[in-house]
Amino acid sequence: MITKVFTLICQSTKSILCLGLLSGLAAVVALHAQTNSAVSACDHGQTSPAKLVQAVREATQQYVDVNAASAAGYAPFLGCFSGPDEGAMGIHYVNSDLVGGGEIDAKHPQALIYEPSGDGRRLVGVEYIALAAPWLAKNSTPPILEGQSFQFIDTPNRYGLPALFELHVWAWRDNPHGAFVDWNTHVTCEKE
Image (cartoon, rainbow, N blue to C red; front, side, top):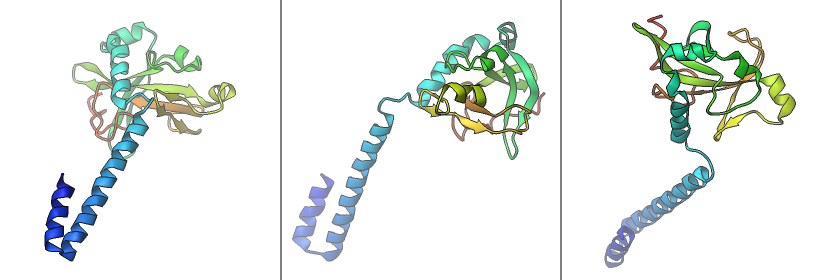
């Protein structure tokens, strides 16, 4: 509609400036159409980040109370992790049976992440973990969960762990840098 109006105006005025604006408008409309097609193509067949975050929330609702996590075999690992620059991860409660199992299942994260608060611990997210050597012995590629690729953490590392693949999902606390970024600027270790 807008291009038709510009075309009519340009035909009546025969202005070079008007023709330049019309060609610029046509380019913007074409770019907009390409962008919408690319976004649709990227989303086709994959779970959106919001769906994975919601699935994690549903799977971990039972662990909002840290005592339920402990009863299910999750135990604190190395205290509260603060970021190298800003933000934190929190306290990881790890289920070692799930880490050693070599399976990745959205309903069973290997670690639950809690933020220390004045009144205890608050569930903020989860971490999926696959030790690299056993994973690569069975698989030719790094793990992917619902379209999200895991990050590789080599050894030696600050956690004293062997090389591993990991994916954070901030399902219970918004992360302004993204739902799958390791460090969360909305999490702190200051109240531990």
